[in-house]
Length: 407
Image (cartoon, rainbow, N blue to C red; front, side, top):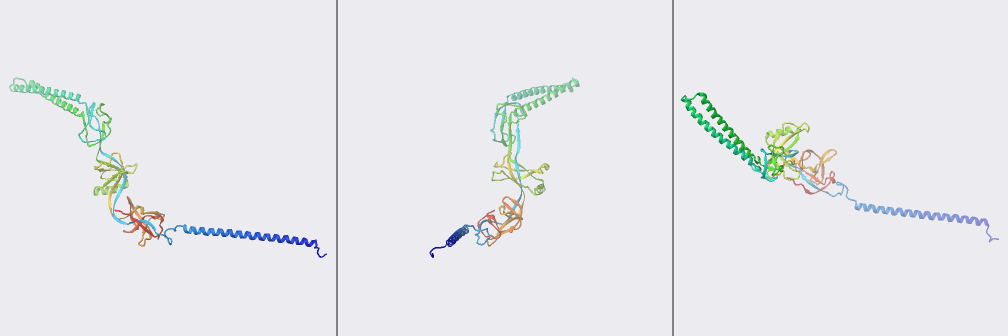
């Protein structure tokens, strides 16, 4: 009887065993999940630490001026005091000193052309020859008429002299003598007319040879050899342009006119001109100011004359023109690329003796080529940065890699 277990006790024991088993499972899985979570978090932390270390190793130095920052290489230039010309810049066009449209002065056929297109011709050189034979015949006819009239004049003068002697002896009346005197005067007038006809015929013959009236370059031949031409036809035979010397015309704003007139009264004003492609500039002088301002553009036309010995300027060419009014003495200059523009105006980076930089506000009066003329803010011999400004901040250290050289 004692070996038998009561059924209720068996049921209670089974329930307790099941509960303990469930608790053990929950505890086991909870502990594993926490361990896995801790492992993952530890891995992420390790990765984060490694990434931070790698970034710390690869990260570049901070902006110039921060502790430990390497000096920034820059190019510098010295503030110079020099004489700088004051110029007015303009765009102009080259004009021939003289232009001649060569035309025929008599009718006829062109039998010869004495030049090539584009050739430089001298004054008096033969350009065209027109058939001279009709004019030679006309000249001979006029000369023959002159000889006839001269003979008639001689006869009339002999008669007038003879009848003048008869009149003195009262052998003829005064009326009879007056007729012979009139005949002699008429013959003399006829001789004058014949002489004029000969001169005109000779002139017409000379017109058959067309010569260059100026020294210049010939353009395209408009009427070729063999063609008939008319006197003073609308189409010229050729156009000549004189280029030694030569003009350059340009326009300036009317506001600059008083200064131009003022300095022109003190002496000649130099004018420089050059095409955008040419390196060498031609130098001339101002010779003309127009007598009125163009009201549509507010500008006034000026002209400079140039010797143009090397043919650097050519009619119709567009050129850049500089009119020098005066030289500004002892002007402080820096390269224009050294000047920066910020919210508060223009400034430059000045290099101190300890190779640190200072931001210095400046005022710029004007620019002349690659130079900026400084009004205030800089002193002679100070060093300014011309290249490398983008990496600079106030107080940054620099190392000078090169210096700008200026004459």
